[in-house]
Image (cartoon, rainbow, N blue to C red; front, side, top):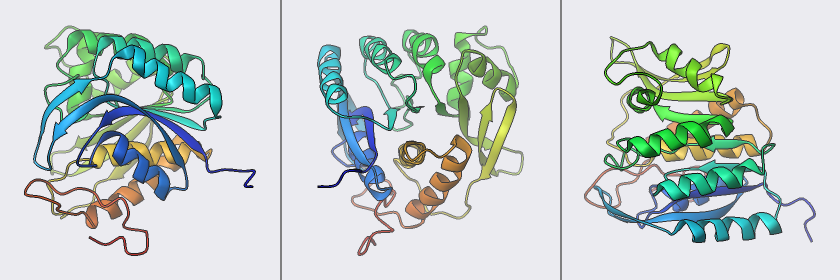
Length: 273
């Protein structure tokens, strides 16, 4: 009998039939980092490799029941919270994770494959800002998502520098803010990690990858959670996660007629598409 099992990570997110996003993606990424996924489904996606057509929410009471049963049975090393499908889910998950304040929490609530979900819902944004962001070890969002999210604390249409918006989130208690795709005038992009004292790391994107991709962000946040489950700092976990994601994108698979899907198994024997 093995006395020291792989780190257990509790992940909340939608079930994706393609396996590019959500729970199915997290399971694969965690496994490739020597971790085991405990999964709580927040919604059911209707999707193919080209687009997501619909998201059907799971009742928040069932989300709570799933999570509490797992948490009462097994010790967890990290929590990842992905896309949520209702206000009730946000409130319920915030209450659950508050009981595990010492466990690293990676919050990745926005998914670019769901352009009309979450980031356009003012009430959902406000609830995230009030309940989950203050508990996050790392909040991950893109630069456009941060700009939209900032409407929670400043007047819509007003401008503020990215560091000022990050500082607002850090002041709430958020340990780190990871802003992806921060752009410069030359078209280059970086993923920037901030804490309350300012920028901690800036990792440039690899150029000349084929694209377009679906699931790159989900892959990054899952790899980040896996690193933190193994006691890495946020900065160290991010550096390792970005190396993994770069490899997954360079070896991406085209399963259908839509977008490329990061190959999460590229490091495994026979993991080539």
